[in-house]
Image (tube, rainbow, N blue to C red; front, side, top):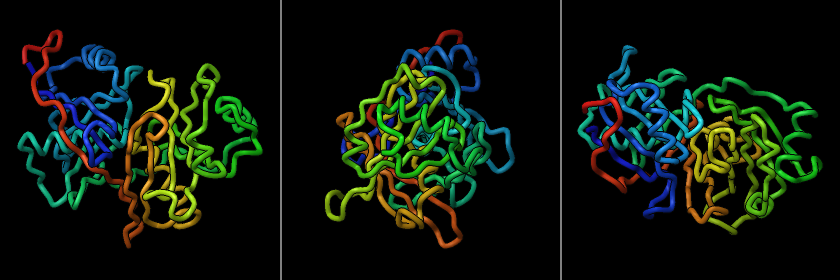
Length: 280
């Protein structure tokens, strides 16, 4: 048996954020069993905490969707850090340092946990051919796209800006047309219309879930693209409205230029899990 927690991320109220399943002390769990458990939970991500292998790391994290493993993802990073600390983990320094497929990720503890946005693996303009594919998948006209950029920090995100938040909430994508696309969409709220500056949606059917409720990696990429230009240097993003959630992602640009992506975290399930082939 392994200790297990399910943590709700990016919401201060129960059951309104994005849950992540976290398995503790998972060094003895095989890749096949990690994949099988991720399919069984059917959450957007399931994670496994292991002993670190890189100097300076407090723990190693492996992140799985129902469709496969990711090098990095944001809400699993925050939820797993929450679970590790709650289980008695003590970081070597002031910040936590997570080892994952994308390298070392810093996580700070202030009013809430926040991770430092990792470097983009792909950035820059989106081709006309890709924009046509994206517009078709979103069931919109290319002319409705107000801005676009590759913002891939591991999962493969491309960022799309629409005219406003209402346009984002009203999207009804054609998931059969996505292929390998992972599309993040944002729209700005009019002043005073929300407690957040923007509404965000994340569409990623290739990972086994059509839409992710609240997405740290996407919001990190969007901030690296737009914070300080089309968006304030620090702001709050709303995500999950169209799915009946109330996610809030807190983006802060530090004086040294580091973008911190944070959110509230709370354990909703605490127990143990029996995995095939692991004695626990």
